[in-house]
Image (cartoon, rainbow, N blue to C red; front, side, top):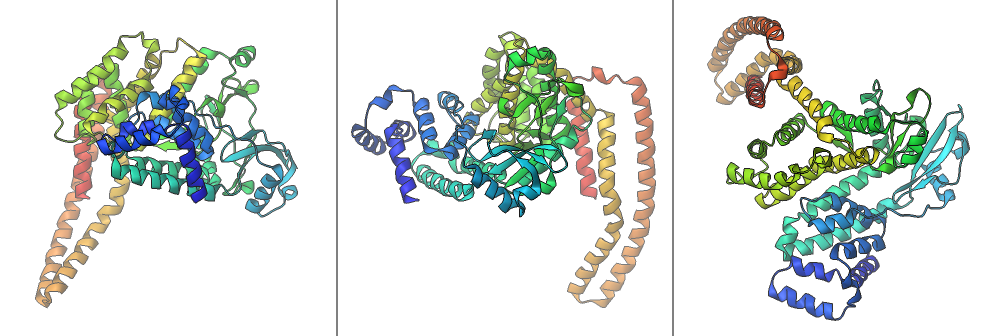
Length: 548
């Protein structure tokens, strides 16, 4: 580790990253120390911008630092814009490792020889990245497959570099308030989790299976079948998919693919994953997206590489949908209120002040033509503005924002006139109506009923046990007998009232649903009524949870 530490320090010095530390350490003593150090180092690198120097140093330090820089580039809520833009250009260029090592790793993971698992195995890798590489093969039943295998020894190498990153971060946190604001240790912990998830190919295969089930009946998206008999922690065998890389516009046009439709389908796929499923592919860069070029699946997206996925709770989805709709309507007060209600902003922040900050962030964007507005950029700018209010941006939303930027980039590469706002708004409004209308209420009641069916019968027994324990502590036989007698009376009364109440509730909901379905046009629901309905629903849900 000492040798690695020296090489990292030498790299930082050669790229003059000491100039970045001058900005991070405002005290006079620190500035004098760094200026003295800088006088001993070469000045030529200072001709480059600071973000470019940081990017070059990460590329020099190898694949782990490259991936860390790529992660940092998504944290625009934490980094200055020039540094985030430079780190976004980091390229994961890694030479393939020896095929003999790859085959040995596959045999070690599967516990079988290559010949026993595959009918044929192409020793020339088709793709190579910092953590793994991919070979084509054929199963004994004739199926063509792609085999992803981890680089040998990656776990130890990753853990060593992560330990060094934490050492650097710990020192910076003690010396710099700016480093504490950047929450470096939290970012490194997030990076640690992402890397170790990518090192578990069984997890990636499970992610792929979940996404495949979610889109089993979709005419928009294809995903490969996982071959579980030839998959382990370090080896992933999947169906080989045939298609055109989405970045090859000329090949798509030659194949007769409708690019405008393809761009709209990509937006629909993204919003379906986010708002319907709450589970989305979070690494949708052009290298992981293909398009089927012939047969019955012509024009359908093909997704690959499922190492990074995002998950959203019902609260996350509701927050996002209401924020997006508020943006569409330029209701900045509502955006500020949502941040406060979510608990992301300290209570001392006045809603009027936050509203003014959001307005100053968004109004310049809305002066552009709609087709030039980036929803991902709006979200990114909102994160940047919220930084001054001490907002703790949730990791899953940062991952979502990164994915949204990828989707927008892909969509506008296919169709420069793509109006993401027009494409997304009907989807979001329909989702909000389903969540906040009577159908949403009845659906949630049905979900809660599954819990009630378990909890309600247990209540008398739990109460009986609690009373027995209380009476036992008092060591009074008479108190036990009296408590049991009183409990018996209460149980009988409770049962009668529960039966009456559930029957009345069912009748009221059924009658109200029939009446409103005939009289109320849900399309006319404005945002105020949506918010009131949501509040009533949440209050009802809270009361029932407490009662259970």
